[in-house]
Image 1 (cartoon, rainbow, N blue to C red):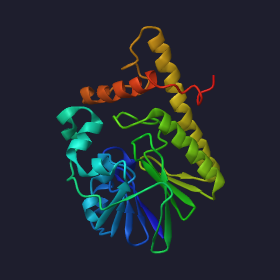
Image 2: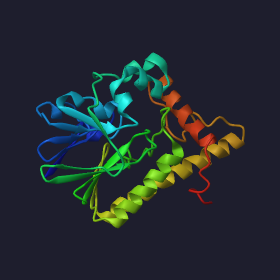
Image 3: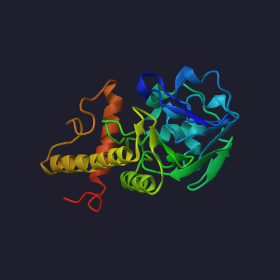
Image 4: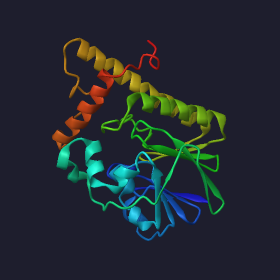
Length: 262
């Protein structure tokens, strides 16, 4: 009915896991050469980031949320959302292609008897979506549940939206018979209670970061590069410092008090 196509290196960037649904649809195309022999009729993208759209060309039609469609099609919009000028070319190892149609929150598809329901879960990107498969599994995209925690380093990321989306996902899993979570990176999570627990841990990381960043800033210390988000700034440092500055700024300009009770 559906099968997970695990990306190399446990889906670590620049790869991401894909999900083949029925015989005609694939969700995300970041699993590298493991997708090369596939010719799906449809590609559903969780969002616009390069590690999720790299092989969109294998599909006859590409679908995405309307808020992310332009960044999948246009270099200029892709560059604008990263906010770093032409340095963004370091991330482009694909050809921009057309989005043939868009979907919205609550839309439902059926591919060869397998149902796919769209959940618009903004925050990681404006149009980020998760997909519920046959009401028994959920493809989480970049709500990836890894130990790094949530990432919101682009211009269209929104901290409060991201927190609200994770809270919604917890409610969705609680109210359904979902026993498998498929994140785009890292390991699968089996069992309803384990999924809920992992989402709560993920949610808590927003508040832990928020507290540390605001404590440092309140003491007159620049939180960037202090290990709150990236434990150690990777290479190329110019790029990752850019991401961290954006994420820190989002905390300093956003109140999470209603979500993060002391």
